[in-house]
Length: 74
Image (cartoon, rainbow, N blue to C red; front, side):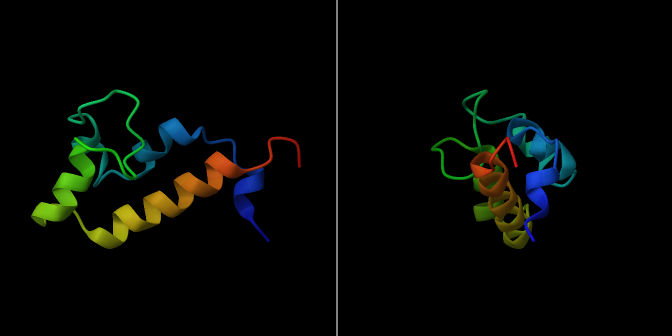
């Protein structure tokens, strides 16, 4: 069962549920950054620099995609 279909979290607010990634998110080049694949993403740069755990960004990206692709009318 996909629990994201019952989740009321807006994908744009998801990074706030990742307190270890959120501080980096505020430094992204674009305010609409998804923190998944954008150039200038401070979250992805932090992962590359070893300041953030790759597994946490991968978990974030998986949940982001699930929330973004969910059916709003289950």
